[in-house]
Image (cartoon, rainbow, N blue to C red; front, side, top):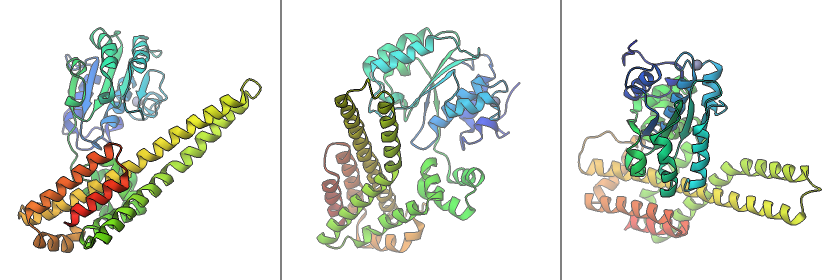
Length: 386
Ligand SMILES: [Zn+2]
């Protein structure tokens, strides 16, 4: 039976907005059409385009008797990560090393308990190290008969070439604003006006659009960032802006991690307490200290992520300034700030706007290294003023 792209795919595919072509490819594979199925896939797409959702939908559809109905036990457990024959690998580490890959390869060699497929989804395949890749190659080349690897990465170039060449590539598109707005209304019950606004300012990032649509505090924070450029009139104002941005990012990180931190600490205390007699006091404090370090590292990363979003928003703002200056005619991302944007466009040259966009890029690079966030931001704000 031949599926057509005209009929919108329901079930597990319903939320993959603007990806009709990819959904078609994966559905054919699930349906077992000749040459459509293979045992190693690489799903790529820009951040927020839905790589991991596509991978999970594919995994679910492979386990489902009806090709991904979205309703049955197999679909639901595969999507949630509870299916015995679906392994979802999602790392918070910077790399996926050889030990972790070896345990996945062992898993991949096992027969599926429920007789369909053994599916291994690796969400950040771009983080697999060279040695990890070496450990993976054999399993990609000579897989167990029922095993399917689904690797995800931002672009094919992010994945080690020996892995890439042994997988079938599926590339997601950046979803359109209209498709994202429709999803927010249908799936999340967001009112139309807010859905359209969130889709426009999120620039193709579905997760970010969802946060902005549902979280008023996130919208307010964004508005505050967009008011910055026209206020950077003195050195004092620049330093002030940098301090405020860094502080707000810290608060955002604290809010996001506080609940998680407390739960982890309670769980660890419970685990240690459960075997009180066997656990020496020194082991307990070592375990608590290790957790503490991990939590601090996570809070730091959340803060950097929040600062990264500030940079994305500033980029969209200066891109709008440049659009006005070059009379490119494209619609403004930040139409609500058209007056301020128009004023800056008149006061400065396109060349200086490009310099400002470069300064934002430099700041992003600095934040990826060990430069203190406040220093990086101060330097940026001063460049944006000059
Ligand atoms: Zn199903």
